[in-house]
Length: 290
Image 1 (cartoon, one colour):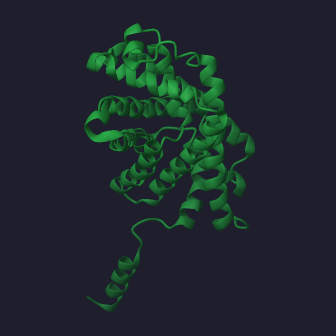
Image 2: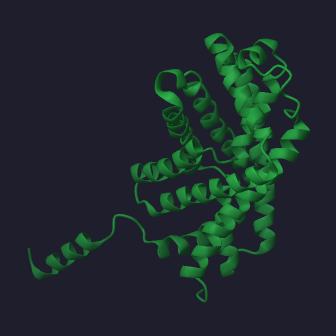
């Protein structure tokens, strides 16, 4: 090996296995510009896919965990629930889709001057609506499978209990849990951009997503699946009886969902992603630079 080859080898040896934080912050300026340049039609399609992908994670988590507590306890059940839920964001990032919560990272580009406020809000609007459509589409399909009858309606009972718990949170609890949720979700996307290969991106996504779900934090797009599924199952007397929630579902309505959960959770998600990740990293790495 000659001296030039030795120098090249030395450079390879010291090259980090992932992109450093400053480079990731810079990359998001370009990513945000690309995302906000999509047509409304592209945003709708990719947003519907993202809503469905997160719904897949939600459905799988319900199916895997419905009877786990009696075998492994509540804590391990939450770990299992969060572990399998992570498939949703893995699909969004690797397969490609537009997710409202992850798109809170576009704020970095807005702060740095590469994305206008108008384009940011336009992207958020179309993607949010499309995420809701995709989530409802998956609710409709999953309900049609009748898989919620598994375990003598135990899966349906689990889904109903999850939805009912969400609509009975106080505004303060829902808002604060949502901040913590999207802080971790946006960190998962941040780490995925830092990773240089698919395996690294999957691992980068898994741990923060497992952490937020196992902790019980609130994700607006996931709730677009969880709560409508509960509303659909509320009409089935066998599911209600299996869940032990007879006469305890007063808040499980569309109005209760939107007012008690979706609004505070969406606002909290914006604070968690747009401020605690986007703004703070912009201040550290990009403020004063173009």
